[in-house]
Length: 238
Image 1: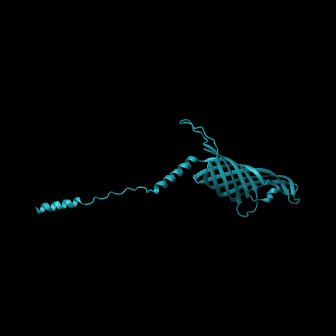
Image 2 (image 1 turned 60 degrees about the vertical axis):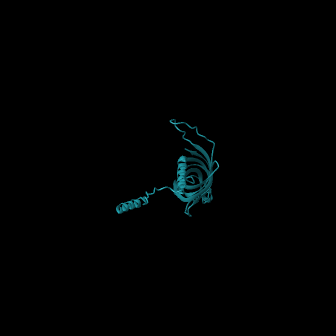
C-alpha cells in the first residue's frame, strides 16, 4: 500500500511540471513595419520615375570684363541634362551645354578692336545633387555641386610684322554651381497600350525653369568664367 501511494504521488508531481517553452519566433515590431513600408514605397517611386532628359535653353552673363572687349558676355546656348532619381527627395542632375561665338582681336597699343577675328568656344558641365519638394503638379528643387567650364579660343599670334600666325588657348576652369527652380508637369497623357503591344516610349513631359550661379574656384589666372545662369527647358520622362 505504501508503494502504491508513493507511485501515485510521483505521477501527480510529474503531471504538475510546467511544459517547456518553444523558441520564440522573430516578429517585426510595430515600429519596424511602417519603416519597412516607407522604404519599399520610396524604392517603388524611384523605380517608376526612371531616368529622364531635359532639353534646355541656357542664358549666361559672364563675370570677366576683359572678355567683353572681344565677345558678348551675355549669350544664349543650348544644353541637355540627365536626371537620375536617387530618392523621392533627392535627384542627380548631370548637365552640359555648348556655346561658340566669333569676335575681333583687341589691339592693345591702339586700345581698340583689331582687324583679326577670334573664336571662343565653351562647354560648361555640372554634376549637381538636388533636394526636391513636391508641390501640386510638380516639384520645387534646390541644387548644388561641382562645375567645370572647358574653353578654347582661336586667336591671332603675331611673331613679327611679316609672319602672322594663329594660336589656340584652351583649358578647364573648376568651380561650383548652385541653383533653384521649378518643374511643372504638363497635361500630356501617353496612349496606354495593352501587352503585348509596345508601350509608349515617353511617359510624361514637364516644364523646367531655374536660376543659378556658377562660381569659379579661387583667382586662377586667365579667363574668369563665373556667371549668372538662367534656364528654360522641357523634361521628357521615359
